[in-house]
Length: 337
Image (cartoon, rainbow, N blue to C red; front, side, top):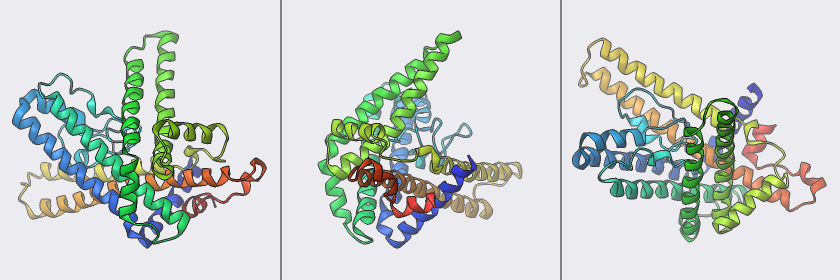
């Protein structure tokens, strides 16, 4: 585990260096955080304006991360919960569509459902743009490609991305059903085991299907076949878990949010009002840190899976006996050095 985290830190450092050299790579992730805040605030306004107390509670539950990268704390909707919707298996993750849970009993569920769909598609669009920019950087060199070209590539593949979202929703619904209907004994253990298989499979598949759709312009089913071929043909000589990027992102996010909760809790203990200069300064600094950590986590994860996909493409082009000699892209090579 320590070795995995060590590789993860190297991967994160190399990805940040890559983004610093070509700052366009960071722009989609920053825009993602901004859109998450925007859509989160709209949901809150809708919940209080049109849905009443019950609707507000439902939206509050919906936008809370479940067990994703950004974690959960407290009982009040806060900036991390609005900004941090792209955690692993979280509501806005390509492998998770949990944001629909709890909304179907509200009177305005169609409005909320449509808004959440647009939110999810916006995040997927921006993640696809990041994937396209990172791919151009890795294969053609720094400064290659353009933001407009990446946007155009994602837009041309948008129908496949929509299908990815629908299938993702079905996969997560099946996993949730298995967990909710497990019984005691071996049968319950079996249902829980099947749910974990579905979640783990779709976490990996979702992250590999999206690069296939954006980079190669395939359909959803073409992306599925590419992801399956990568897995079945052993085109990757390492497992995703061997580079602990996701674990580090979750841990850092937990530290940042815990620091915020502890700080505000201490201020409450001291009976400091929200207008106190210390609260304003500390709050703004904490929000800036949340935005930074969230944006970097989004970018680093997208860069990591794009590196894996590029490595798999290059390994596929040579004979099986020569695949161990294919060098991974620079950030991943730094992690494995």
